[in-house]
Length: 523
Image (cartoon, rainbow, N blue to C red):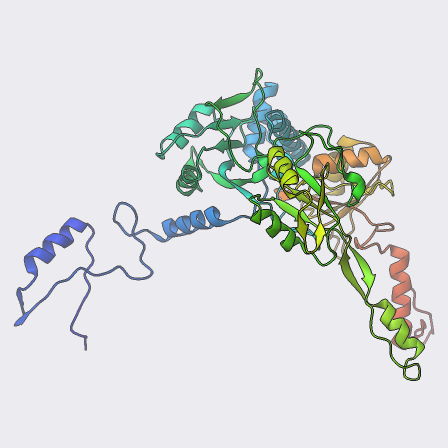
């Protein structure tokens, strides 16, 4: 039995309005019917043209909303595989088959390595292009995973958009038409490297950038979707004079807040007072703060600068481990074991100095002058300029104390072979050993070890291949621990056998199998 009301959905709004005006108050089976406009259901989404969106369109709309709000980056150097092949084929003047070493439809077996090396070359070219135009591309490499103790994702710009997944036939006119067609103010600058695989688009106002991001995220461009990502705040800079071969478009430059110009010759040291530099203008955007109260926290120091009208981008107070002092107990009740346990308890305490980094040199100088001698928690602040950078992001650095030559390669695709790893890493130096640990069924375990003859060659491979993909999977490079040769955790084969013997002895086997022949167990 029905409830006495119903819902009717028309294909067009005009038909629904005409039916409501014509039939409202009419007679239907002896009853007067009353027709009212209904609200769409919760799971019904109406598009701009007034029609209900399909499931695929709803999913695309959700992806656009999530991309606009997300502050996490992924694979900032993403390049399409077909764009790599088209790029190299056009530059070298050869066919695509010759680029991948395919003859008569038969591959030589190293097509994946050739594609990975081509991708590495194009990524290096993009990095050099953006650096030449004052863009610090190191911060564009947003890591999906962070080690313990590292800060979170970098702050994102509100006016600069990183455009990825571009096909090779992209040109500046195509991008200009796409970003001009969405309305609002036009972009201030569009950077398109010669590889035509990525672009940076900068707007003068955040509202125009948000409109462009919202309307163009995952939108089909030529035959591929556009992947948009907010560029980190430290990604932009002043553009140098253009040279032949660069593809750029720029209108008269406007000042953009939160943009950092990359400096040359600035040496960054560890957390110690020796990093301070002479009190001269135009040296750094970081200041060194001395004579801090040991109870002053980073949040309190940040609030002190904010209250004075300055907005530091990062504040850091180095700490050190110190033992916790506990009240002494009577000598009769204390035991040596208790005293040893008390001494082992540690806590982190302030070292009495800190650093604050600002978006520009001018703001750092003004903050130093304004806060010089100010009292914070009973201590007068002593401030100087410093060469330390608190927001730099670099490729994995090598431990200087140990001239390591062995690299651990994680996320190795299961289709890859040892020969392909030899060809890929052998392009950057002479290899001493390449090991691809395997399982009992003969397949490898998804990681490998590549050892070079010299540390310089290992550093070159680490810096160049840290963004490379092999068979579509990103190779994660780490410096191998001392003795790591089997499981990636510093455990070699001999150590694993000794551990198996100890486990067998603890299980009561005693290293000997009691049977008819009484042969000992071999590990």
